[in-house]
Image (cartoon, rainbow, N blue to C red; front, side, top):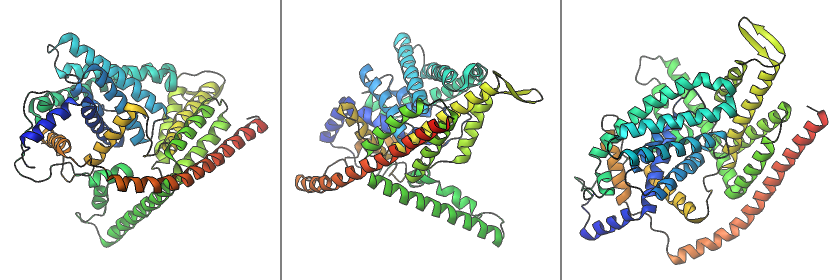
Length: 462
């Protein structure tokens, strides 16, 4: 990367003065970290390690309060779009936990000044976030049993908050981008003109449909495997590739069929209808509809993971017996009301997850200035996952710092010419008319199925 001229330095200064631009970049970094976090295994469906809150922790000291809140909101909305959980309880947990953590971290920093380090600020935010999520889980999923899980959940927050705080402290001390953002130094030059970046070709593939690195390791090319084992491994890789290709075809067809805003409105409407249902039979039918819808939309999901989560929710609710005893297995007592309530909560929780996956599409836009920030953040996010570098564990701070510098200095946001834009707008208008018509036909079909489910449930009386 060439050294920026004095004119470009002045441009960079004005860009850092543009809080909207800074907020969009930090939000994009939140999206990226949230996608990594989303792929990590977790004991509870809404539990997160909190690494996506790192940009919020870094912004505590240099973003004004109003822009700090915009960053928090953009992080929740954007990561819900990326993960497809905007209409699910997970989005509620994320919004509550992130907002409380952000306000606590901001408050601790403002009251204590520099007396409390970023480690302390991070711990306060992580513990308060986990406590808030546990409180919501008590009423939404687990009931009174939530208090049995709370100590482990809070301990997790303490550990992750401590680690994140130390990382943030080290990053603040060694990051050139952060120093420039806070006005502590000039934007540094790089040693050469080569691209700096993350290089997420494989990571991007993993976010949306599997990590090829694991596939190559599974092939057994580096171990003492015989011909039959290698053939079996290659067959497995071929089946996964075919499955991924089939899902990609369904996804492209779905996105060409329906407008994102129509899918979102349809999802919100059906979510309200779904939440009003009380019977297990009708909820189960809605649940099957949502799974089929998500499959037709080409969204990635795991029925095994869904079953594990649902069994966990039901088992947790059974820990406090209520109602008629159905079965005794030694010290385990299965009661009618506890089982029914657990099944209802499990169907609701996972049903909303599948509905959200089906109804949330990449092209969904939000109105106003906030919508513009979300759109700009996704532009930055696209650049993050396009780069060809690496983030190594031993040099994570340096690699992430170089990533931020490269994205910030990259000026590839130029739009098309006026003539090209006019031609594209005319073509898009014609195509959007037919797409909107197809969208409403699709919505009518889904609503017809929903009405059929409601009629069937009422007729059978289940």
